Amino acid sequence: MSSLIEKAAQRLEQLRKAGAEVPTTSDLPPLPPLNTRHDAAHPRPLSAEPARPAVTSRVVELDLDVLSAAGIITPNAQRSPTADQFRVLKRPLLANATGKGAVPVRNGNRIMVTSSMPGEGKTFTAVNLAMSIAMELDHTVLLVDADVSRPSVMKTLGLPSGPGLMDLLMGEQLEMSEALLRTNIDKLSLLPSGRPHARATELLASDAMSALVEEMGRRYPERVIVFDSPPLLMTTESRVLATHMGQIVVVVQAGHTQRAQVRQALETIESCPIKLMVLNQVHKEDKSSYGYGYGYSAAPSSASA
Image 1 (cartoon, rainbow, N blue to C red):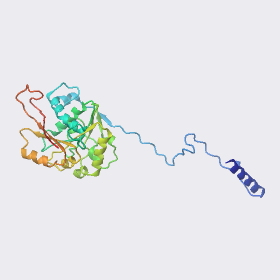
Image 2 (image 1 turned 90 degrees about the vertical axis):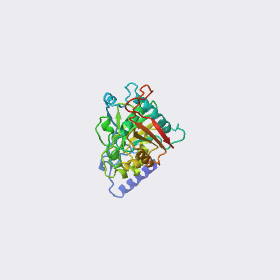
Image 3 (image 1 turned 180 degrees about the horizontal axis):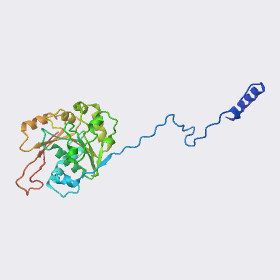
Image 4 (image 1 turned 180 degrees about the vertical axis):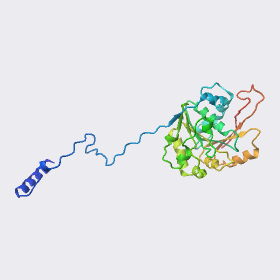
């Protein structure tokens, strides 16, 4: 480096003696002040944009006393027949979700709750199942309102609707963390249905939905995702949603749902490896029987693999 400087100085001196005009250091424009934070090794970018602040999910407060009075399981409630029934229901679902079942279940942590027809108690079952799983020590749960035509999870929980599943699928400038809602139950998060869309079936069948469901399950390995789905015999959306699932819970209203409807509903979800049926609104005369009584009653009645 020093030899190059010496040669340059000699050349300038030769030019000066030959009568050429050579600028001196005093003729040169002043150099900009040295930026100690951006040296030559770390130059300042030409158009530095401010970093986008990290987005955290909004926290919502569930009124646990109101939910408990409405028959919803809550962490601070006393032991009840409903809570015991959902403990029975969730055990095989969690075993399949964690690879501890009789056979491995692909996407076992994705559980869809549905019914044959409206009014059979699927949302009530989905909410209580999510609440029960949230009480586990080793699992977190995400409850997704996927009944995009008639969403009711948020209403059941006493919360306003907001951006959610449909907005994410429509390619809105929305991050997952912006749509997710954390609750005052530590291990329970919510994803609303979002804005209605005329092409909901196509959106649920899209590659975007596949990628979104993958992201949901991959973000936290211990997470179980419960989807409240439309009734199977009312829309095609539930049948498309079933293709993304590893387990499906079909709610059947005792004394109301016809056998033919149940059979037809099960035929629409033949591709799903695990199907459980929950019998809702069973009235037991013998109140001394453990875990059951008047009112809501749930029991896994069959499974197929």
